[in-house]
Image (cartoon, rainbow over all chains, first blue to last red; front, side, top):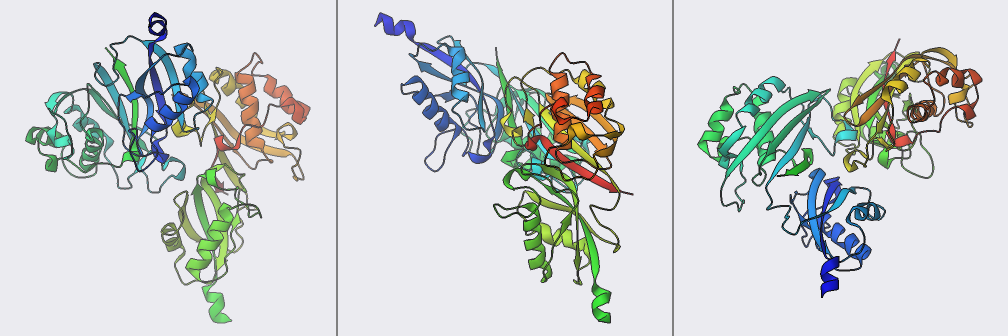
Length: 252
Length: 252
C-alpha cells in the first residue's frame, strides 16, 4: 500500500478547445464531449481508468482558452509531461496548455477562483466566414460606449436572478463581478467579464442585454433597474453559445 | 436581338470565404471549389448557365474577405439584389459581400488594381484551437520590430524572382509593392501587403522569409540581398496556406 500511495498524485490541467464540434464539456448520451475525449485519451496514455473533473461545464458550441480540470492518477509520468504526451494524440480542436501536480485538497469547481469569460460580437454589414464560429454576427449598429457604460453597473456583489436561466439549479443567485469591459477592435466587439462565479447562461444573458441596450434607445443606466428587478424577463435574450469563450480561472 | 441586348449586363461581386473546406478558387476535377459553388448557385438562381471569372485564384485553405469575380447575365434581377438572393442559398462559409453592375470592359484579373493580402501568425507557446484555421502557429519567439524593418525593403518596384514558386507561369517577375507592414495584437502577428500583383505563392514566401528573419539572428537588411539575388533558394520557406487571407482589390 505504501508504494501505491507514493505514486498517487492529483493533476491539474488547463485545456483550450474549439467547441464547435462538441456537445459541450460534460459527458452525455447523445454526442461527443470534451470531458469524454480527455477521459479516453488520458486512460489510454496512463493505462488506467481516468476521469477528469472540470471547472466550467461549458455548453455546446462554447470555446475555451483556459478551462481547468483535474484527475487522480498512479502514473509514474511527471505531471508536467502529461500535456505534451496528450497533445500528440488529441484532435486538433483540443489542446492541453499546461499540466502540473496539485495538492489533494484542490478542486477545480469548489476551490475559490476568479473566472474570466469573453463574449465576441461581429458588428458588421456582412458576415465574416472565417470568424463565423467564434463570433456572434449582429448587423444593426451598436453603441459600444453606451454598452461600456452599462457594463459598469454589473460590477460588485449583486443578486443576478435577472441573468439566470429558468433551468438553473443554483442555491443562491448572488454573485460578485470584479470587472466587466466592452472594447472594439475593427468590427469585433469584445465583452470581457471576471467574477467569482457565474449562473447558468449568465454571461450569454449579460451579452444579450448589452446588445439590447447598445442597439436601442435604452439608456445605459437601464442596466441598474434590470439588476434590481431580479426578474429574468427584464434582461435581454440569451446570446448564442458560439460567441462565448472561457478565458481562464485564477485560484486564490 | 434588341430585347436581349437591353437585358444583358456584366456583374461584379465581392466574395468572402473560409477556404478550409475548399480546394481553392479554381474549378478542378478532384474536389469542390469556390468558383464551382458560385457557378452552381448563380445558374440555379438566374436560370441560365453562369460562369464566374475570379480576380485571385486562391489556393486550397486560403481565405478571403474581398475576392472579386464577374459574370455576364441576361437576368432582369437588379445586380445589387443578386448578393442578397445568393446569400440565402450559399453555404455559411461563403458570403457575397456586394454585387453591382459594371461596364463591359471590366475584367477582375486584367483591369489594373491594388491587391491587399494579410498573413497571420499565431506566435504563442501553445496552439489556440479557435484560431487554428486562419493563423499559422509558430511557437519560437519572433522579433516583430525586426520583421517590420525587413518588410520595408520589399516596398517599391523590384524583380521578385526570389519570392516566386518554381511552377509559376508568369511572363515577368517584376512587381510593385506599395506597402508592407508587420503588426502585433495579443499573440497574433499580421503581415499586411499591398501590391499591383503577386507571383504564385509570393505572399506566402514573403511571410516565410519574414518569419525566418524574425526568428533568427539574420539582420533586417538581409531582405535587401534576398531580393537582389533573384534566387528562390535565398528566400525563406513557403508559409502554410491557411495563414493567408485575400483582403481585397481596389480597381483604378
